[in-house]
View 1 (cartoon, rainbow, N blue to C red):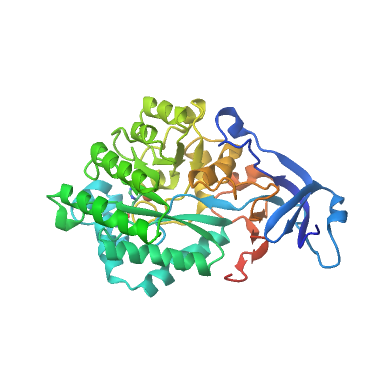
View 2: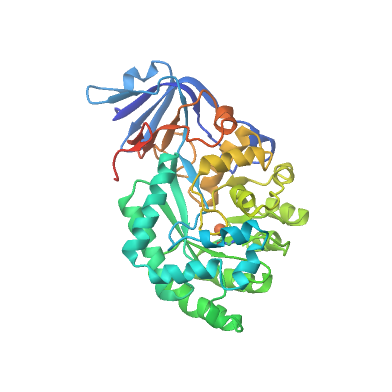
Length: 423
Ligand code: NIG
Ligand code: FE
C-alpha cells in the first residue's frame, strides 16, 4: 500500500499514543516524542509513523510529500465541551458581572442563559448557522479539528431541534467534526419558573424521545447546580436518558458543591464537566468509575472563580480533559490554546499533562478514542503543525495563535493561519 501524503521533517512528533485507556496519574506527564519523524497517510488515515527517510518504500510517483520544516506536530486538538450554536451575545451583562453580581443572580433575574434562549428563538436557522460557522472557523484556525456542541438555548422542542440541526449542517459543510449533545436541561424556562416538575416531565416524556427518534444527539447533559437542576432532578433526567440510549454528560459542581461529581460516578457518565467545587470524595468516586473530569479553566478565569483542583484529581488517577466551554455567558471565547495556557497557569498542570488533556483524554470525553486523539496507525489523519520548537513553548508564550498548518482527514485545511477550503 502506497501513501497519498507523507509529512516529513517533523522536528518533534507528539504522538499521544496511550494504552487503550485514558491517561491518568503520573502518566499524564509523559508524552512520546519522536524526533526527525514522518507520518504517512492514505485515504485520510495514518498508515505509517517513522523516523528520518524511512518513508521511501511507502511512496510512489503520486505521493505528495510535505515538509514540516523541523517544527512541532501534535494530533488535531479536541474541544470536548462547547455551546457552539446560539443566538446573540451578552456584552450587556458584562459590566454587571465585573461589578461582582453573581452569574446565578443574573440568571435568576431572567438574564444569563434565559436571555440567550430568547435570542436563539428569535434567530433563523441561517442566522444561527452563519454565527456558528465563524466560531468554528476560529477554532479550526487555532488547531481544533473536533468539537462537541450542545443545544440548551431553546428549552422547548422546536428551538432545541433548530439548534441541533444547525450543528448537523455544520458537520456536513465544515472540515471540523462535530459531536452532538442534547442539553434541554440547561435552565428552567420562564414559563415553568414555579413548576420545574412540569418542565422535567416534558423533557423526559416529550423532548428526549423526539431528539432520540430524530437521531439528533448522541449525548444528554444536565446543568446540575443550586437553583437550576437539583441532584435528584439531574439523576432522574440522566437515568431516563440512559434508558433511551443516550451517553451521559453532566455540568457538575461548577459553583456549589452539590454532589454532582458523586452523581456522575453513580450513573457512570462519560464525563463530568466544570468540577470547580467538587468534593474530594466525589473525585475519588469518579476515578473508581472511570468518569473523565472535563475541566474548563477559561470559565473560572472569566467568572473570576477558583480553578478546579486538578492536582488532587491527577493524584487520584482521574483522567482529565480540558475544553473551552465556549458560550455567550461564562466563556465568550473559542480559544482552546488560551485554555491550554490556563491549564498550566490556573490549574497548575504541566504542559505535557495539558497536551494529554486536549488530545487523547478529550477523545475519551466524547467517546471517540478509537478514531482520534493520537497519531497512530488506523486513526484519522488530523494533525497540527505548530510554529513552536517544543510543547512547553505553546503554553509559555500565551495569548497568540501558534498554529502554522492544520490537516483534517489528511487534507491541508489551514496554511499560515488561513483556512484553505470548507470541505
Ligand atoms: O457551561 N453552566 C452552564 N452552562 C454554561 C453557561 C451557559 C451560559 O451562560 O449561557 C457553562 O458555563
Ligand atoms: Fe457548559
